[in-house]
Length: 260
Image (cartoon, rainbow, N blue to C red; front, side, top):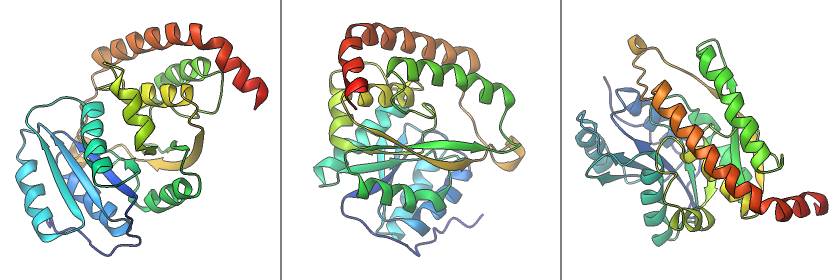
């Protein structure tokens, strides 16, 4: 496999970077990086305690590519923790926004630039991806996400979260880190949904852009760490917390909706 990244970059930014949390990603991570680097610079990868040897290979790529940076976590802490780690370091380096995308090849590298441009045009907004599924998407997961999306919209009084689970999105760093600083949860599979809801509670407006998503079978190099029972229990507990928070925020949220 050719692991050289394509460094023909469409746009270089000092405020917006691509942040890829990565845990035992399989070979698709190299295609993901190639696509991301072909459309944006810089690209950072947070290796979240991977044990599959990908950390070494990614570090070797970064030595050849000044637009690529690899951050290492010594043990697996979860997607939310990996994003928070990368976002803190990005903020210290002067960046204001991060676009998150999965390392497994599901998210479209060629949509990075339009998402970033939407964020640059409206820097206070949370730019959310709205997934366009093809035949590769497991029907159970497509149907199941509708439940989480319904609750996320209830918890925000339908302010405009079209999809709460799709991790291809652009976060303004400062409000994201502020939310996570005072919230001990949202560090694993619950991160994407809870981040969207809590940022909306803080007055960060959601903006939605469509983007295709592709699910790869194992024989195509696809890797999934989704566990149906564990992760759905985690989402149920998360929505219980969010609904409790929604109840005491209801008057403020209603006032915002009526005055918008």
